[in-house]
Structure formats: structure tokens, C-alpha cells
Image (cartoon, rainbow, N blue to C red; front, side, top):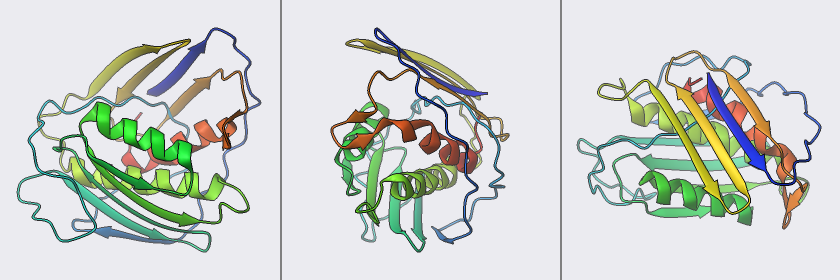
Length: 216
């Protein structure tokens, strides 16, 4: 079971929102097509960086040589968004992210920095209406790209657990690479917005990510 939990010094649980079904869209996985079933299940989340951190260079939109590196690339186009994601698990922590959502760009930069992944995310969406579509489709694309990059998952520990404190928050994540997606998400966030970012969509971002990467 993939679990994400945040403990705040001033907890104020936000109302949960029902998970909406993921629409059928155009999804292009560049390279080997991963086999997964995007079933609308519940989930729980935790990321553990791979022990193998070879310097393979940043993933760019241009034709770099993949070689033996674990790289996943996805292009996803819907009526609301156009998303291109490329992730190199054996990178050096280089991020090139432009989503139209500044706080999300910052969080993706942190994913690259702390996981030592190279992360390229380019997204254009209907953010003039709402950030929800962009958040969800970016999460879907990242989950699919990571699934492709992991390949047969040989040499990777199935279970992971990590707790990290930062200022007034402590975050705990538990992960199982089970192939059976499930999310348990408990986030007590004392504010509904960070700048212009709507924190109420956090769990809704985790759900499509967990479904696509098939983790619990």
C-alpha cells in the first residue's frame, strides 16, 4: 500500500473530494510500451531513489543516446492539455520543468534534486480556467514515464519507507512496488493555497500517478 501522510503543527483537514474517472485520451509512450491497467482504484505513496546513480546527463526533448540508462518518455495530448515528460532514473538531479503552475514546477525540481533523477516536464493547459486538468495529466504522464523507466524492476527493493521533517511539517511515505495500485493519502494542510496553488488537489494528483506506475 502506497501511503503519504503529512503532519502539521496546525492541522486543518480539508474536505476530501471524490475521485473522478480518468478520461480516455491520446497517450504516446516513446520507446517500449509499458503494460499496465489504468483502473480507478485507491492508492498510497512513497518514493525511494534508486541506489544506482550513474551520470547519464539530463533528459532533453532532443535525441540523446539512451544506452543502458533507465529512461521513460511520454507525450500526452487531451482536449485540455499537451504534456511531454522525460525522466532519467540514473541522472544527476537536473530539472527542466515548465507547467504553467509555478509551485508545481518547484515541486518537480525537488523530485529531481532529492531523487537524483533527471526530469523534463513541458505542459500547456487550460490553467486560465483551473489548474486541475494540468495537475492530473502531468501526474498521469510522470507515472507512465516512471513505469517505462523502471522496466522489469530487477535489482530494486520492492518495499520502501521514508520520513522527512521540514520546518513545521513531517512527511511519511510508504511504498510497495506490488503492481496493484492503491493510495492512502492523509494530508492535513492548514491553508487551501500556497501562492496561487490549490492544495486541495494534492491527493487527486497522487491518485493517477499511483495508478499509472502500478504502486501501492
